[in-house]
Length: 199
Image (cartoon, rainbow, N blue to C red; front, side, top):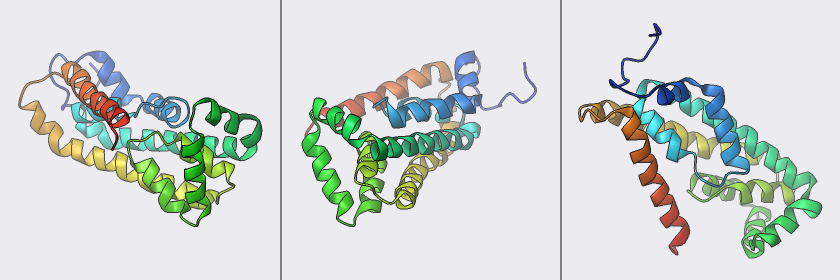
């Protein structure tokens, strides 16, 4: 047993949750993937880990926030440099042309910060906003500030919430190994409903 093993881990918690909660680079890499090519919200994994390891929740939030900022910045420049040969054909192939045009109109109409902020803060995949902002040559500093603020509120808000409820959930004697798939399943189901239902 390592000397710095968290006291909040419940008895019988599987090693993989402990390792993943400690692995900041791995969490940052997962966040990078979620902000670029994986359209499933990272919260389906991050929230259960934060709740299961509340004392590590801030460190997890920092890691996924940095990974998100790097991934979002990359996709901004993909949109900026590869708009015609890659981005527009991909958007058309995915059937998102109208959504892209609506978003581009909002971005070019002076609402860049709030458009990016709201898309990034919502459960909707933010790839359209990151690629779109680059494609319309939106101000990178404003774009970066919007992503940093929205995702910072999301991730650090969840971390603080996990610190509040994590210890209370331990009283139910639910192992982290069971808690992770239960919470992840609930979040994934909610995200699927959001995507399917006309809201």
